[in-house]
Amino acid sequence: MERREFLQAAAGAIGGQAAFAQSGRKKPNFLVILGDDMGFSDARCYGGDVDTPNLDALAKNGLRFTQTYSTARCGPSRSCILTGQYAQQTACDVMTPGNIPHWNRFAPEHLKPLGYRAYHSGKWHIRFKALSGVGFDKSYALMDQDRFFTPRTHYLDDSPLPVVKPEENYYATIAIADHAVKTLREHQQSHNQSPFFHYLAFTSPHFPLHALQQDIDEYKDRFSEGWDVARQRHWERMKQMGLINCGLSKLDTGIWPAWNLPSEDLMTRIGPGEVTRAVPWNSLTAEQQKLQRTKMAIHAAMISRMDHEIGRVVDQLKAMDSLRDTVILFISDNGASAEQIIRGDMHDPAAPPGSGKTYLSLGPGWSSSSNSPFRLHKSWVHEGGISSPMIVHWPAGITAKNELRHNPCHFVDIVPTMLDLAGGKPNGVFPPDASPFAGKSFAPVFKKDNSVPRDWLYFHHNNNRAIRSGDLKAVSIGKDGPWELYDLKKDRCEQADLSEKQPEKTRELAGLWQSIEDGFIKTRQSAAPSTKPLMNPNAGSGKKKAKA
Image 1 (cartoon, one colour):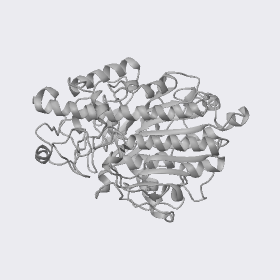
Image 2 (cartoon, rainbow, N blue to C red; image 1 turned 30 degrees about the vertical axis):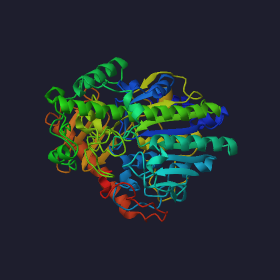
Image 3 (cartoon, one colour; image 1 turned 90 degrees about the horizontal axis):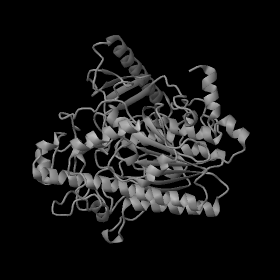
Image 4 (cartoon, helix red, strand yellow; image 1 turned 180 degrees about the vertical axis):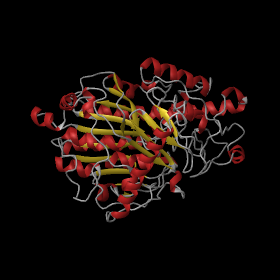
């Protein structure tokens, strides 16, 4: 793109700094909604089989991005969303080891000097306290990822709340939305002259598969055809929608999370209906097919309930007459999960599937379907692990409706984009020795697709490594795994490895990845540590925090 053309596109993004100052418009509100372990093609508007009418409505009246990237894991993704930096730069989530730099700043700290109020509802997974460490004005922080009905570890405005008892009829997805609606009402009553940033982080559909029975009943027998048919159907819909232009990846039957319980253990503790590999559906027994379609029904029920609660929050925005001026952004923290573990209150095979006494996980078969047409799952940095749906809805600033945007972007871009739309300076609150934002504003893309070029996008989780430069992506499984090379313009499903045909390009990208990695390590090691107050980094995430 010519420089003049790029500048015209940037100026055309309503709410960008220059345009914002000239227009005299109100500063937009921001509502960032985050799903948890939701696959790229779970939602209807991304080709899936789950009923998501509220997300579909936002997409129909806004934009759907096709190449938005996460970090492949819950904690690092939240770090990127809230800081505009890669997790390897800041180490502020509970999964990234290293020194937390003193210069690290979070979204509220960037927006509050511009007059914003900042609120948080839902999952946390950040080491700092939500109010005193990050700068939110109100927070409901759910730290317990093992119990949707009876959480033991959750905080209101940094103060611990009592353990929830079964008779209280608590369900995490509803409670998170309740707090968001209550907080927005209070904002309207006491701070309606100020714009707001609300970070709404659901735990759905992260394991364990816990859902309300009435929601599960809506999906009875819907998934009887199995994951092979579902993957094919997703792929065909997505091609028709223009979301993808690649083939359907093959099932990776020999790859699963190393920390999963052994097959024999799962079969003993859950029952003979469990399946631990992404094998063809027609190879399963009738008993296996019955349990597996039930698990997918629960996964779908969790997403549908989240969609319903998103609708309640949107209704509150309408009641406040704020929907037009609110930038709503929906994403998922990583791809669907192939993890199969049992923790929390363990698993009672006699209890109804999806109830609080059970502990079921989606597994690699249905995870492959939810991530279709891409390869692999959460924690891997192939496209299935890092590709996120992204819906952007903003009536006051986006004239396009029901359009796609193919511009690659990453969660590190969210804070710079909000700052751009709010009229703030990109690095205004950083101390002089801070690293500048790793992300960049994608606001110009609201007006024109492919108007924000990238030099590279970096990925590293659980020793899985990747670097994307232009349309080429080098990716490796494990610390010592060989580098693969893919042309994502033609082969986003990563089926045709070009590393042997283009060894020099493969080495070049691998070297670029290593230089970036070394720079991030040096940054963490050289910076003075942060002195902000910390949450207990292991609270509610199990003994092995890296497996949360």
